[in-house]
Amino acid sequence: MSLSVGDVAPEFSLPDQDRQVVSLADLRGTPVLVVFYPFAFSGICTGELCQLRDELATYTDAGVKVVAISTDPAFSLKAFKAQEGFDFPLLSDFWPHGATAQAYGVFNDKAGMAVRGTFLVDAEGKIAFTEVNQPGDAREQSGWKDAVAKIAA
Image (tube, rainbow, N blue to C red; front, top):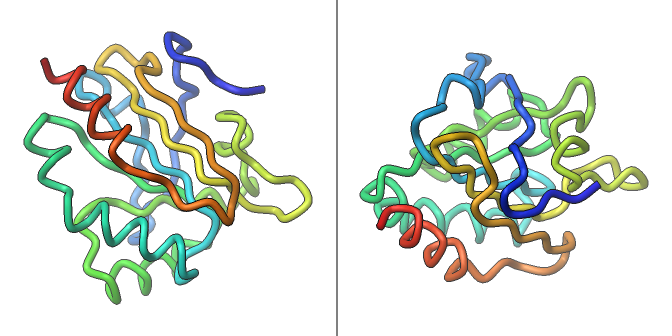
């Protein structure tokens, strides 16, 4: 199942790198950029999240919260965040393994990981932008920024 613009975003409640639960419902009223990625510490994922870190003001200045989700355990995410200095939560979809990625249609069953799915959820909880790339295909983030500019206008 893949999600389309206008669909209601599936709810989630996941632990962050500090094992504090972050729920999409708790963020309602604010647009949220939900970024799924395969694995912490892997080359392409690190590059994408570092670009997101470096350009975070593009999103936060527009009033958009950013969360990044992988199937890594919280302990790995804590080390990854500390090493790279990310200023947004890294959420663990570890158990039940990949359940949130499955709900968003971005789980690779054979590899047991999320693929590169990006979803901009508007303040009412509906998908305003979606992009799905396969694990080896780095994302061009200009589309995300265009979608944020539209939602902020």
